[in-house]
Length: 410
Image 1 (tube, helix red, strand yellow):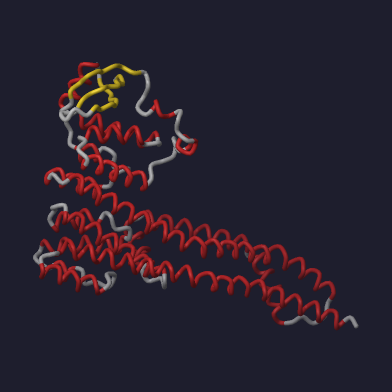
Image 2 (cartoon, rainbow, N blue to C red; image 1 turned 30 degrees about the vertical axis):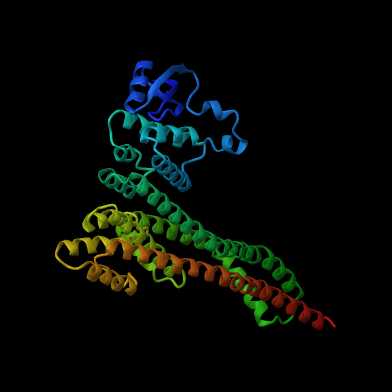
C-alpha cells in the first residue's frame, strides 16, 4: 500500500492536514469522504507515517525506536485517543495521529494494523483483539461494551486510569522490595567471601601458631571447613531445589500452591493480597460500569488477578453465583479479607455494586501504599543490623583469637 498526504476541509470549514495508507489516490479520497471531509488535495508521498518529523525529534525519542511496548505506552494511547474523540475527531483520524505520535516501531506497527482493520470494516474492539500481547481481554471487552453504548471516549479514559494505576502499583511494590533484596544479595556475597575466602586463610595462620582459641573462633573455623567440604553437595542440592521450583511453577496446581503459600508469608503476603484485591475491585467495577453482567465481568476479571489462589476463589465465586448464591456469600473465604464480602453485601442491597467495588479497589490500594511505605521504612534498619551483626561477629571472633595468641606468646 502507498502512503498519501492530503489536505481536506471539515463541514465547519476547518482545514485538516494528514496522511493515510491506501491502495490508490482514489481509495484514499473515498476514505476521507466517508469520514465527512471535503477533499482538496491527495498526493502520494514517499515518506512513511511520522517520517517528516523523524529527523526533528530529540535523541531520546529516536533512541526509543526499538524499545518494547510498556504499560505507559498503552495508557498514553487510550488517553490521547479519548481526548481526540471528545474534541470531535473520528476514530480513524485519532488512530492516524497516534501512529504519527508514537516513537516506538513495534507500537506503530500495532496501531497501523488497527487502522487497516478499521478501514476494512472491522470494529475497534476486533482490531484490539488482534494484538492479545498488547491489549488484555479486559480492555477488549470494555471497548466492545463501549461501542455498543456509544461511550467510547469515557471508557478509554477509564482504561488509561486503570493501566496507570496498575503500573504505579507494580513500580512501587518492586521499588520497595528492590532495596531489601539487593542488600540480602550483597550480604550473601559477603558471607560467601568470608566463609570461602577470608576465614580459611585466617584459620591456617591461627592453627600454625597454636594455642587455645575462643569458642566463637572455633565455630567459624569449623563452619568454614564444613562449608568447603560439602560445597559440591550444597550446589547440587540448590540446583535440584531450583529445578523442582521451576517445574512446580510451570504446573497449574504447583503454581496455585506456591501462590497460596506466598499469601501467608509475613509482611509480603499482606502486600500481595492488597494488590490482588485492589486490582480485582477496580477491574470488576470498570466492567460492570461498562454494561456487562456480573457473570461475564467475573469471568474476565479473574484473568486480571495476578495471584492464582485469589483467582481460583473468583472463578469458584462465579460458578456458585450461577447456582444461585449471592456474590457476597461466595467471596467469604480465608484468602479474601472479610471486609470485601461485607462491603459487597452492602452494594448488593443498595444496587450500587459498581461504585462499591471501585471503593474496595481504592481502599485496598491505599492499604497497599501504606504497607509499601512501612516495608521501606523498616527494611533498612533491620538489614543494617543483620549485615552488621554478621561482619561484626567475624571481626570479634578473630580479634579475640589474635589477643589470645599475643597473650600466650608472652
